[in-house]
Structure formats: C-alpha cells, structure tokens
Image (tube, rainbow, N blue to C red; front, side):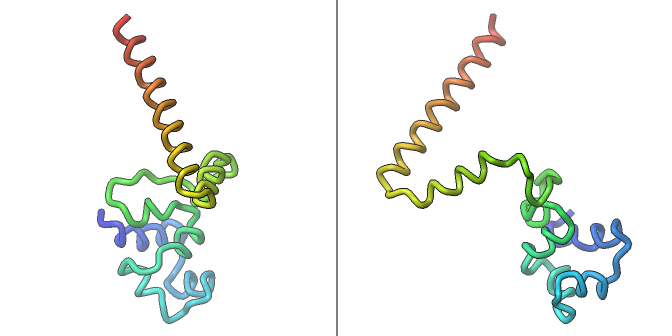
Length: 110
C-alpha cells in the first residue's frame, strides 16, 4: 500500500470521518491533503503511528513515540556536537555495531 494510502485505513480503523480527524488536528480544510500524502507528522501523532509508517512503503507499524526510546532521544542530541565530535561518536557507534555483528556471526559458526 502506498504510504499516503495508509491514512484512510487508519481513519477507518478508528471509526473517524474526515471531519473527526480535522477536529482532532485543528485543520478542517486540510484532511484531503493529508490523505493525499501531505504533512504526515500531525497525522502520525493523531493516530499514534510513526511517520515512517505513513511515508515509507515497507515500514513496519510502530508507535509515534515510545516512552522507552531513550536511545533515540540521546542520539538526536548528537546534532548539537561540533563536527569533529559527531564524527568521533559515529565512529564509536560503527565500531560497536561491527563488534556485535562479528560476535553474532562467530556464534553462528560455532
């Protein structure tokens, strides 16, 4: 299903009309624009699904925000670092991911 096509089924799943959604997102004249794929963030928040789910064809359905997403919140703050520190953090993350993948691979071989 095309990402923009997910709005209508989500609306139906909640039993809401376009007017109901419009009232929830305070944009009565905009609902048809949302259903055609525009400005998904407020819709994602309203339905409690990720913007990825609304915008990417093969994205899994996930919650809009997870209370347990401390890692994502922390990673978002990396943008505040200067470019050299950002590169250092990313290198460290890459090294840890590589280490974890190698462990998994060697465990499968054993």
